[in-house]
Each structure stands twice: as structure tokens, then as C-alpha cells.
Amino acid sequence: MGLAVLAGLLVSLPFLVPQAFIAGWIALVPLLMALQDRSLGGAWLLGLVAGFTAWAAGSYWMADFFSLFKGYPAPWHVAAAAAYWLYAAQGFALAALALQWLRRRTALPDLLLVPVVFVGTLNLFPALVPLRPGEGQSLFLPAIQGVDLGGVLALDLLMALTATLIHDQSRAAPHRSRLAIRFTACALLIAWFGYGVVALHDWHETTAGWNTLHVGIVQPNDPPTRGVPPLPPGYSRLSPPELDATRELAAAGAELVVWPEARYKGYHRNPGIRHRYHQTTRELGITLAFQDAEAVDRNGHTHNYNTATVLHPDDTPAGHYRKMGRAPFGEYLPLADTLPWLAPVAEAYFGDFTEALTAGDRPDAIKAGGRRLIPRICYETVFPELIARGVDGESGILVVHSMNNWFGETRQPSMHLRASILRAVENRVPMVHAINNGPSALVAPDGGVIAKTTPFATETLLAGLPEPLDTGATLYNRFPHAVPSVLNTGLGLLLAYAGLGWLWRSRARQPASGRTKTSMREGVTGGPN
Image 1 (cartoon, rainbow, N blue to C red):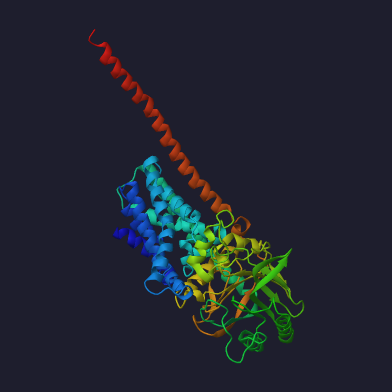
Image 2: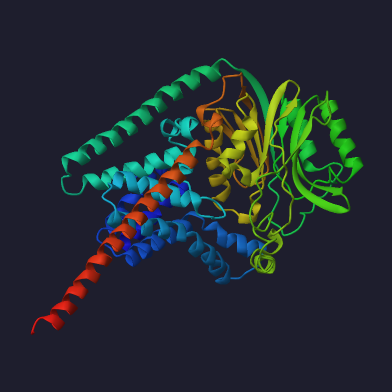
């Protein structure tokens, strides 16, 4: 049991302490050691313990969420979070169970089974936020360069393969046939890191030749609140603090200014506010990107959207993007149409956090002033395929608006930023990620952080971002569904192969057993005559 707890802690450590990224590469070793010769029930229990430990440590901020937004006192806010951790841990439990079952039903090596089973199961398991160990590797730049080939799931597979290789090496000497598999695994790792070193060098040189775009980020650090936060004294909706900060950034040379996600600005609902924003961008001669709530009436029905808007002095507004990847239970209720009883249960659990939003249907980028901006809003950074659709093989700047203050002063906002860095590398685009309470950052296409703000502080950031040239689509951007499809197919084939083999052996044994019983009956009745 202690080994399972250790595995869970190693899984979560790179997310909590990014400098400890190497822990993610060995995280499965203790769990694989614990699974040796365990029953199927024992394997499930060990996986559950590892998963619960990983989720409780890596998303401890869920307790803060229930305290801030539901008002649960101690220890009930922890109990509410533990209910989610226990649910999310089932992904690990199912992976451990499936691995142990496949070990018994097939003669396939762990070097094949472990990466496919664990990465495939965790990818398919419906957690609110998918657990992808590769997203804890943002500081390990040589390791993350290869995600432009196969996405973060390819990195997850390599990490699981490394842990399996280490565990395999500590066991008894393998058969000669297994040595070839080990050499192949080692060759894959060498090729991955070799590509990473070369790509990192090449992208440093490539971006050095690009023009510099001066980008400003406004970080207001609004306090956590269940409703729309009040404005500071001396400000109004017509003149919020963000506009004053934008004027200062423009005076310092900013060409593009990005605001984070907010609960309410009033841009879409108040013509006076729209006019003031447009007037400001014209006066300052800048491009302004921000997010706000939008309500649209269609045929007597009101559709609420989470919308990102880009304003430009030459063509105001340049365009809107309506959030497509909504947060389940936060912005919509999964299966609410087919399971209406789910709505009151979810609302009782999540409270004011639950809000019915309509999903947008266009992942298009927005062109403003000759440059291409790709807006995305908060939780959408956990959908790699959605980001790839917006980039669509063209140059552009990924602009992310986030609001993470409902998790309090925890590590969650920093974890969100680091996970989003993988999206920039997958598509080889520079990224601006503005987070309400920080840390906000500018990120280069190789994943390097150019500049970053202080977490939980009201401040602005002005720095130069390499303005992208058309370098062509990455392999991942062209085929974002390739690795997930191959992984899902491989997991399905493994389970089908083992299941059919088990059925075949069961049927093969049944007739033999029947013949034996018949022969015994014949011997009893016919012998003495």
C-alpha cells in the first residue's frame, strides 16, 4: 500500500513543484512493483490508492473551491473535495485492474501493456480535468519539444514507457526475445530526446529572426466572489481599472494589450461601454483582446455565451470568439437532457459555479491589423485538439483569457499556466496567457517563458513577443486525432484479444469436461455386467 501512495505522490509532484519534473518519469515504478502477483481485486485497490493520492495531492485546491464558493466550513469542504478525488481515482484503479487482467490473459510484455493501458485509460476516463503527466513537464524543455509530432499523449506514452523500462530492468533477466523489445524502447527514448535537443536549438534560432511585438497584460487580481465583484472606489463600468492600466501600457509602447477572463464587464450589454472601449482603442492605436459574458436572443430564447473580443483601431471590432470547450458542471451539465435528475444534484454540489452556457460553433482565429490572433478561454487549454483546430496550420498568436480566483491563493493558477505551455509547443505558436490573479505570461513557441507576472498581485506586464512568420503546420497540428485514435484502438484491441482468448479457452475446456463426466457415468453403469 505504501508503494501505491508513493506512486501517487510522484505523479502529482511535477505539477506542484515544476522543478521536480523527473519524478513524473519514474512515477509508475512503485505501483508496478506493488502490482506484482496481486489479485484483480488487489490491483484495483492499489490503483485506487495511487489515484486518490495523486488527485488529492495534485488538486488539493478543490477544497479551497468548496470553501470559497459553497461556504463549506472545515472539515466539510475537504469531504466534498474528497468525493471528487475518489471518483477521479477510478481512472487509475481501472488502469491497474485492466493491466493485471491483461497480464494474466496474454503473454504480451509490460513494455507494451503498461503505456497503452495507463495512458489510454486515463485519457478516456471522464474526469473534469484530464490527468496528463506530460503537462507537468513544462520546465523540461528538451522533453516537450516532441509534442509537435504527436501531442501531449505521445509524451505521456514515453513517460510510462520509461517507468516500465526501469521496473523491467530491476526484475529477473528476460528471455532473449524480450531484449529486442527493450532495445526498441531505449531507441524510442533516444530518438525522442535527440529530436528535442535539435528542435529546441532550431526554434531558438528561428524565433530570433522574427519581428518583436510589444504585448501588455493587465492582471487585476479580482478577489474570489460568488457574484460579480464590485469595482474599486473611483471606478465605474465605463472606466474600469483595466482601461487605466491599458493607457499606461500603450504609453509605454504596447501594441497588443490582453485582459484576463472576468465575471462581467458589460461590453455586450451596454452600448455606452462598447463606445468607450472602441474610442479608447482608436485613441491609443492599439489592439485590445478581452473576454466578457454575452447574451443573444434567438427566436425568443436567450443564449448565454462566454465570449472573447478583439478590438482594433482600424476595424473596430475585429471579431468575436465564443467559447466552444465548456467546463462540465461549471458551464454546462453533461447528460442533462437525457438525465434531468442530474441538474439538481449538480447544482447542490457545485452551487453558483454551475451556469448554463451555449457552446460556440466556430474555432476561427481573428485577424486584426495584419496579424492573426487565436483566442481561447480558460479551461479550453485542456482540449489540445480544439487549440489545434484554431491554429489550423497557419501562423498566429494564441491568446488565452483565464480566471482562476475561485481556487484561492493555491498552486492551481500556476498549474493551469504550465499546462497551457504544451499547447504552444504542440502548434509552434507564441502564446499570451492572461490570468486574473496570475501568474500571467508570454510564452515562446519552444515553450520557454519570456516574461511572467507575480501570482496574486495587481500588476501589468509589458514584454516583447516573437511575432510569428508562416513556418507551416506541425505534424500534430495536421493530425491532432492521430495519437488518441491509435491509442484508443490499441487499448480496444488488447482488451478484445484477451477477452476472445479467454472465451475460446473457456469453451475449449467445457466439452472436455462434459466428455469426462459422460465416460464416468458409462463406466459406473456398464462395468459389473
